[in-house]
Length: 127
Image (cartoon, rainbow, N blue to C red; front, top):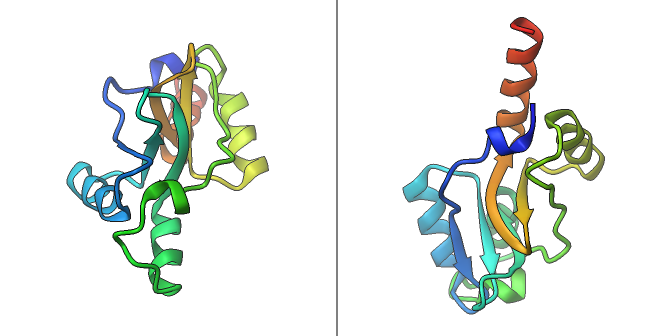
C-alpha cells in the first residue's frame, strides 16, 4: 500500500508568523495531533505536535509566540508514492508520530503512526 491511499484531502496548518495559539486551536478543532507550519508561499517550514505544545507549556512559553520561533524545522517527510512500511521505518527511526507527505514541494497530507499501524494491520489481516 502506498501513502497516497492514506492521506486525506485536507491539511491542518498555520503560518510561521501565526501564534502557537493558532496551532492549539486548530489541533483541538480538527481533533488531530499535529499542525504543519507553512511559509506564506505555502512551502512547509516545520511542524508542531501535541508533544511540542506540552513542552512549550512546561517551559512557560507565551502561546502568542510565532510558530516560526518554536516549530520543529527539521522536517522528516515522505512521498505519496512511498510504501506504508517505508513510512513506518522512518517514523520509528526518527521517533515521530506525525509525518507530512510532500509532493512537488507542497504538503498533500499528514500521516500519523496510527494511520500507518492501521494500514499495516489491515494488509496483514487481509492480504
